[in-house]
Image (cartoon, rainbow over all chains, first blue to last red; front, side, top):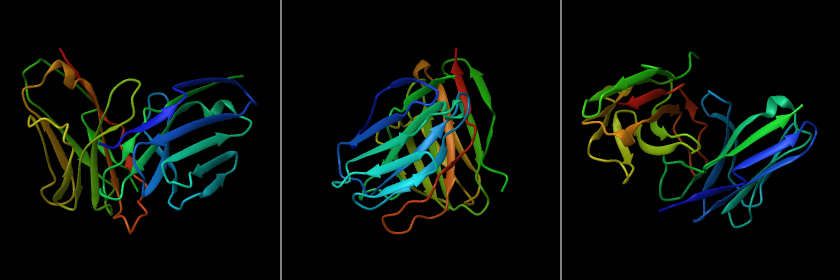
Length: 112
Length: 117
């Protein structure tokens, strides 16, 4: 079945440093979504990418979808303590219109 | 928009007992999803409904698990003869219907934490 892998599993940064998490799927995706889960909270939708090579920005966050639609990345510029949490990518394949397959997430800690 | 509501927030039960969880989605959302999440892992898809129809079920889902959404509004997830390995956070999410290759954002509830003694 479809597998979605994320690296790294953990990332510790000093406030102000940049952060990147990478997501790779075993199969081609129709779209990919990114979610953030704060400690003790539930996943919250950040963004969706649909087109090959798509790049979207949300303030300090930059999301990319690979040309082959099998990989994606999230980059945060100049991290802040409010960025702390677990970042998940979640992919949807063309054969399943409802199922999202989540990666295992990258846990980000930011030291002030 | 009152968000996705799940009940109970916590459930502690002995191995072998049956448990049932409830999820109330955002009212205008016709899609409802169940996930299971364990520590250090991402949400694992269990099943989803479009209105009252259960359209997809994970192959990993044991026949001890059953979900319903009888009137296309709230949903219940029942686990029969619980086992230690069922201990997890059970998350419900809802969304509008997807269009084409684009999905819709899923809105998650706070989950039900199940602990099996």
